[in-house]
Image 1 (cartoon, rainbow, N blue to C red):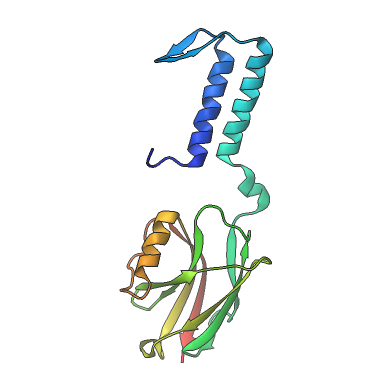
Image 2: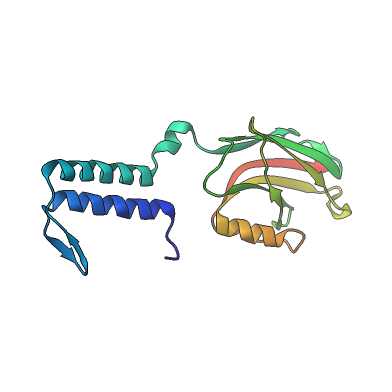
Length: 182
Protein backbone atom coordinates (compact mmCIF):
# COMPACT_ATOMS: atom_id res chain seq x y z
CA UNK A 1 0.00 0.00 0.00
CA UNK A 2 2.79 2.37 -0.89
CA UNK A 3 1.54 5.93 -1.26
CA UNK A 4 -1.33 5.45 1.20
CA UNK A 5 -1.37 7.48 4.37
CA UNK A 6 -3.50 7.15 7.49
CA UNK A 7 -5.94 9.82 6.28
CA UNK A 8 -6.62 7.90 3.05
CA UNK A 9 -7.23 4.64 4.90
CA UNK A 10 -9.62 6.35 7.33
CA UNK A 11 -11.49 7.96 4.40
CA UNK A 12 -11.89 4.59 2.62
CA UNK A 13 -13.15 2.97 5.84
CA UNK A 14 -15.64 5.82 6.22
CA UNK A 15 -16.82 5.42 2.63
CA UNK A 16 -17.32 1.66 3.15
CA UNK A 17 -19.40 2.32 6.27
CA UNK A 18 -21.55 4.82 4.37
CA UNK A 19 -22.10 2.29 1.55
CA UNK A 20 -23.07 -0.31 4.17
CA UNK A 21 -25.55 2.19 5.61
CA UNK A 22 -27.11 2.94 2.22
CA UNK A 23 -27.34 -0.63 0.93
CA UNK A 24 -29.95 -2.68 2.79
CA UNK A 25 -27.86 -5.84 3.11
CA UNK A 26 -27.43 -8.62 0.64
CA UNK A 27 -24.35 -6.95 -0.88
CA UNK A 28 -21.59 -9.34 -1.95
CA UNK A 29 -18.16 -8.13 -3.07
CA UNK A 30 -15.77 -10.99 -3.87
CA UNK A 31 -15.77 -13.06 -0.66
CA UNK A 32 -17.23 -10.31 1.54
CA UNK A 33 -20.95 -10.56 2.20
CA UNK A 34 -22.83 -7.81 4.02
CA UNK A 35 -25.90 -9.28 5.72
CA UNK A 36 -29.15 -7.32 6.11
CA UNK A 37 -28.97 -4.84 9.00
CA UNK A 38 -31.56 -3.14 11.17
CA UNK A 39 -32.40 0.48 10.48
CA UNK A 40 -30.65 1.66 13.69
CA UNK A 41 -27.47 -0.26 12.77
CA UNK A 42 -27.51 1.36 9.32
CA UNK A 43 -27.93 4.83 10.84
CA UNK A 44 -25.03 4.23 13.24
CA UNK A 45 -22.90 2.93 10.36
CA UNK A 46 -23.67 6.04 8.29
CA UNK A 47 -22.92 8.43 11.15
CA UNK A 48 -19.67 6.66 12.00
CA UNK A 49 -18.67 6.57 8.32
CA UNK A 50 -19.34 10.30 7.92
CA UNK A 51 -17.35 11.01 11.09
CA UNK A 52 -14.39 9.04 9.71
CA UNK A 53 -14.48 10.97 6.43
CA UNK A 54 -14.62 14.29 8.28
CA UNK A 55 -11.68 13.15 10.42
CA UNK A 56 -9.71 12.13 7.31
CA UNK A 57 -10.31 15.45 5.56
CA UNK A 58 -9.04 17.23 8.66
CA UNK A 59 -10.79 20.59 8.80
CA UNK A 60 -9.02 21.23 12.10
CA UNK A 61 -5.95 23.05 10.75
CA UNK A 62 -7.96 26.14 9.87
CA UNK A 63 -9.53 26.22 13.32
CA UNK A 64 -6.28 25.75 15.24
CA UNK A 65 -4.38 28.21 13.08
CA UNK A 66 -2.06 27.60 10.21
CA UNK A 67 1.27 26.04 11.11
CA UNK A 68 3.77 28.88 11.22
CA UNK A 69 7.39 29.51 12.09
CA UNK A 70 9.11 32.86 12.52
CA UNK A 71 12.47 34.42 13.32
CA UNK A 72 12.77 36.56 16.45
CA UNK A 73 16.55 37.17 16.36
CA UNK A 74 18.49 38.60 14.57
CA UNK A 75 16.31 41.18 12.84
CA UNK A 76 15.82 41.42 9.07
CA UNK A 77 18.86 42.96 7.29
CA UNK A 78 21.21 42.64 10.28
CA UNK A 79 24.95 42.25 9.94
CA UNK A 80 26.09 39.07 11.69
CA UNK A 81 29.42 37.44 12.50
CA UNK A 82 30.46 33.99 11.31
CA UNK A 83 29.18 32.62 14.62
CA UNK A 84 25.73 33.75 15.65
CA UNK A 85 22.58 32.54 17.33
CA UNK A 86 19.25 32.28 15.48
CA UNK A 87 16.03 32.32 17.48
CA UNK A 88 12.39 32.03 16.61
CA UNK A 89 9.01 30.54 17.34
CA UNK A 90 6.98 27.70 15.91
CA UNK A 91 3.18 27.48 16.10
CA UNK A 92 1.70 24.97 16.63
CA UNK A 93 4.54 23.43 18.62
CA UNK A 94 3.84 19.91 17.40
CA UNK A 95 3.75 19.83 13.62
CA UNK A 96 2.15 16.58 12.47
CA UNK A 97 2.81 16.61 8.73
CA UNK A 98 6.54 16.89 8.15
CA UNK A 99 9.05 19.06 9.98
CA UNK A 100 10.61 22.52 9.99
CA UNK A 101 14.20 23.00 8.85
CA UNK A 102 16.78 25.81 8.83
CA UNK A 103 18.23 26.22 5.32
CA UNK A 104 20.97 28.69 4.31
CA UNK A 105 20.97 30.08 0.76
CA UNK A 106 23.82 32.00 -0.85
CA UNK A 107 23.64 34.72 -3.49
CA UNK A 108 24.10 32.09 -6.25
CA UNK A 109 20.86 30.34 -5.22
CA UNK A 110 22.53 27.28 -3.69
CA UNK A 111 20.79 26.17 -0.50
CA UNK A 112 22.43 24.31 2.36
CA UNK A 113 20.21 22.49 4.88
CA UNK A 114 21.33 22.88 8.48
CA UNK A 115 19.11 21.05 10.95
CA UNK A 116 15.54 20.34 11.86
CA UNK A 117 14.08 22.92 14.20
CA UNK A 118 13.56 21.42 17.63
CA UNK A 119 11.08 23.59 19.49
CA UNK A 120 10.69 23.78 23.24
CA UNK A 121 7.27 23.26 24.87
CA UNK A 122 6.52 26.99 24.62
CA UNK A 123 7.18 26.98 20.85
CA UNK A 124 10.55 28.77 20.93
CA UNK A 125 13.65 27.43 19.19
CA UNK A 126 17.34 28.33 18.92
CA UNK A 127 19.97 27.36 16.40
CA UNK A 128 23.68 28.13 16.70
CA UNK A 129 24.97 29.11 13.28
CA UNK A 130 28.66 28.60 12.53
CA UNK A 131 29.61 29.77 9.05
CA UNK A 132 32.87 29.09 7.23
CA UNK A 133 35.15 31.87 5.92
CA UNK A 134 33.62 31.62 2.42
CA UNK A 135 30.51 33.38 3.77
CA UNK A 136 32.44 36.45 4.95
CA UNK A 137 31.22 39.72 3.34
CA UNK A 138 28.39 37.97 1.51
CA UNK A 139 24.63 38.19 1.78
CA UNK A 140 22.97 35.25 3.49
CA UNK A 141 19.37 34.21 3.20
CA UNK A 142 18.15 32.02 6.06
CA UNK A 143 14.97 30.09 5.38
CA UNK A 144 12.61 28.21 7.59
CA UNK A 145 11.06 25.53 5.41
CA UNK A 146 8.43 22.93 6.06
CA UNK A 147 9.37 19.59 4.53
CA UNK A 148 7.45 16.36 4.02
CA UNK A 149 8.97 13.15 5.38
CA UNK A 150 10.42 12.31 1.96
CA UNK A 151 11.87 15.80 1.48
CA UNK A 152 13.24 15.72 5.04
CA UNK A 153 15.31 12.65 4.16
CA UNK A 154 16.73 14.51 1.14
CA UNK A 155 17.56 17.53 3.31
CA UNK A 156 19.15 15.27 5.93
CA UNK A 157 21.31 13.64 3.25
CA UNK A 158 22.47 17.05 1.98
CA UNK A 159 23.80 18.29 5.35
CA UNK A 160 27.55 18.94 5.01
CA UNK A 161 27.33 18.23 1.29
CA UNK A 162 26.89 20.14 -1.93
CA UNK A 163 24.22 22.81 -2.05
CA UNK A 164 20.75 21.99 -3.29
CA UNK A 165 19.55 23.91 -6.31
CA UNK A 166 16.56 24.05 -6.34
CA UNK A 167 15.06 22.88 -3.06
CA UNK A 168 13.28 19.50 -3.31
CA UNK A 169 9.56 19.19 -4.02
CA UNK A 170 7.38 19.05 -0.90
CA UNK A 171 9.44 21.83 0.68
CA UNK A 172 7.54 25.02 1.47
CA UNK A 173 9.22 28.28 2.46
CA UNK A 174 7.61 29.48 5.68
CA UNK A 175 9.88 32.40 6.67
CA UNK A 176 12.85 34.23 5.16
CA UNK A 177 15.54 36.23 6.96
CA UNK A 178 18.01 38.26 4.86
CA UNK A 179 21.31 38.92 6.61
CA UNK A 180 24.79 40.22 5.80
CA UNK A 181 27.81 38.33 7.06
CA UNK A 182 30.76 40.49 8.16
